[in-house]
Image 1: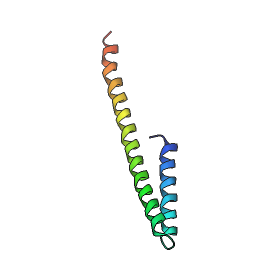
Image 2: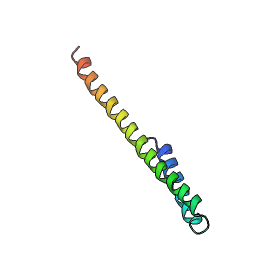
Image 3: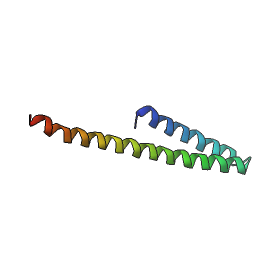
Image 4: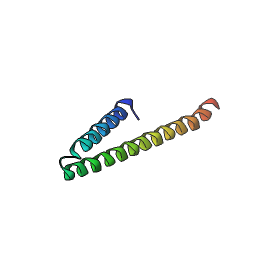
Length: 73
């Protein structure tokens, strides 16, 4: 995962959790909404991380499989 994208997910999760804690004393519904958004934000972060890791593994496997055929020439 690119560092900027990871930073975005970390920062946005912190902001959402901070808003959740601030609104906890004043409005329960907004607090619940922010908590759910934070939960999904963290989940999407893990999904993107797995997607990028899978892409990197596939590219590494393709590079390793292409390497022996080139050296056989």
